[in-house]
Length: 363
Image (cartoon, rainbow, N blue to C red; front, side):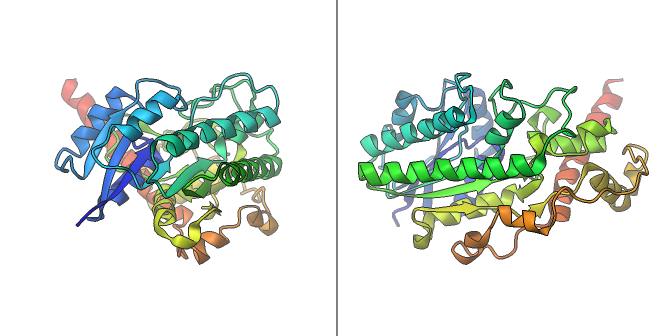
C-alpha cells in the first residue's frame, strides 16, 4: 500500500514531537521530520532507531533562520517520493526590526508566506498545509518588545507578570493571530496555490514530553513554570503564566488537532483555536499538588493566602472559541488542567528523582 508522504517541520519541539509520534502511529503515513539542528537530528534518530527509514527519515537544519528558502527547498526536494501534505510547526526568529506590533505581525506573516511560496514552487503534489502557531510570540512582544524572539527563551528572574493586563494581552494576541491567518489565506487565493491551508492556533501549551526528560533545560517555557512550583521558587516566578496568557492547551490535544486538520476535508482554509480553558494560578496549582502529592509538601511554597479570583470572568472564555475544533475536527473532550498538570508533574518528579540518585551515587 502506498503511504501518504508528509513533511513535518519542528519535529524536535514539544508540539512537533507529539505530532511526529501520532503520525508514526499510522501504517498509512511516511514522514520526513525536519529538526532544528544536527544535535536534534542525532537525538531524534536515536529515539526512533527501530523505525524503518521508509517510514521516517530525518532532515536537520543547519541554520537558525527557518525561513531561508534553500533549507526549505532542500527538505522538500531531496526526497525519493513527492510530498502530499505538510505540517509546519517551526517558529522562526523574527528580526529586531519590529518597532511596532503592526510590523511584528507583518514580519511573522511574511516568514510563513515565504515558506508557503517554497512549497508552491518545489512541491507540486502537496494538497494541504497545516500551520501550527501560538499566541505566545505576540504576547511576548506586547509584554517586552525588546526581548529575544527565540521560542525557547525564558523570562529573566527579575521579570514580573503582575503588572500585565492579561485580558488586553489575550485579546490583542488573538486578534494578531487572526490577522496573520487572514493574510495567509488571502495570499493563497491571490497566488492560486495548488494546496489549501488549515491554521491551528494555540494559547499557552503545557504537557509532558514524548520521551523522559534528560535535564530541566528540556522543559518548555510553560512547563518550567510547573517545575518552579515544584522547586519552591518565589511566587513572582510561578503565580502567573508566561506573558500573561492564562488560557492553555495540552500539547497532546494540539497534536491531535493538527493531525486531524491534515486529513479532514472540511478543515480546508479554516482557523482552529485549541483552547481547553484557563490554567489555574500558581498558588492554586501549588495547593492542588500538595493535596495530590503529599510528599511534595516540604518542597512546594504554600503562602496560605486566600485565593484570588481568576483574572477572567466567564465572558473571557469566549475570546478563544474552540467551536470549530469540536464541530469540524471532532475533538469534543480536551484534557483538563488537572490531567495536564498531573502528567507533567510525574515527568518532573521522575527527573528530579533520577538527579537525586545520581548525586547520591557520585558522592
